[in-house]
Image 1 (tube, rainbow over the protein chains, first blue to last red):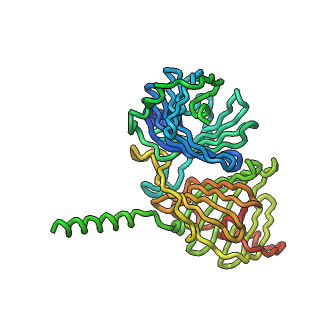
Image 2: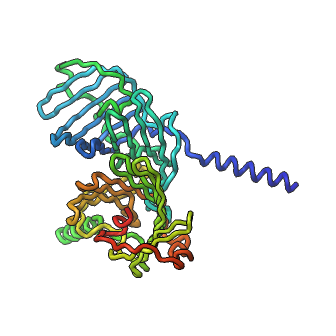
Length: 215
Length: 215
């Protein structure tokens, strides 16, 4: 009887440990948020606001930054289902309509990623002082690059990403101010002047996901 | 009467906004935690566990890492009040006792730091999915360096730090698994073999705080 109880307890513990192991997860389908990207020892820096809709496979991305001491601003609307990206400038009401070859890849922990560690940012000693996150590591076979991606344990939201390849060097991305939902559905409607004029059509390469497509 | 009510509401709002502005804060006096440091595009990488006691001004710091493909391990006990640092090796029971010139500097947002922004890591859309943090920026006049330090809004715990100077390049530090309190008070008692033998005595320079003293 005692043996049976011991086996039961052991099995319960095993199931519990298995259940608590961080899993590959996918971010919520509708998210708005911000991010910063820095690369080349700070020579490239950009901050962006994004609106992400995995249900209808579309992303709006407004970015400003500095590249080799040159400031820049971009505003992109990507409609993956329609295979088109709009490069929008409200400043001079110009709009480039660019056919898109790449497919939509949702924000998620890649399947091939391995768990490096689970840690608390801040402190777990009191409510509101800490954030439980999982750090995943993996390789991008196409580029020979390596990445470390951090996602929240609860909610599966991206927190940061460090990517290294010989061609890019270290690229660091930090995500913040994420919210579940879409603040303004009109983010996904191209402005009128995009409809009136169809400019240069440039085909894209084989970018892997929408973040890589954007930088 | 309406004007008075309006003035009262305005004053209340003003006080509320003032009260909500992030302030320069100091970390709790007793903390245990971990950190990682990377520099020189990843050529230097280290992970450390620390035990921090601001009441009695002492720090224990166990670190392992890799510098130019050479792995290393250090174990340091710093007793600022006694102006001594022990460089401990349990492996061969050796111990260097090093006189210390630097003063103790608590973990805190430096007074001269300016608030860059307040953001939520993760998401504020659901409990447990986000962490409210403040990002502070400042200059280190002695080194001509610049830093970006991130502390939690609640609890004032360090989350990350980015430091740049011409001599060091970019140095990135991430803090995690912090807990309020001291897990083992014996962390601050030097081992017996440190008492038996007093080795090389080297005087230190003018390091600024205990983190700079450690790297």
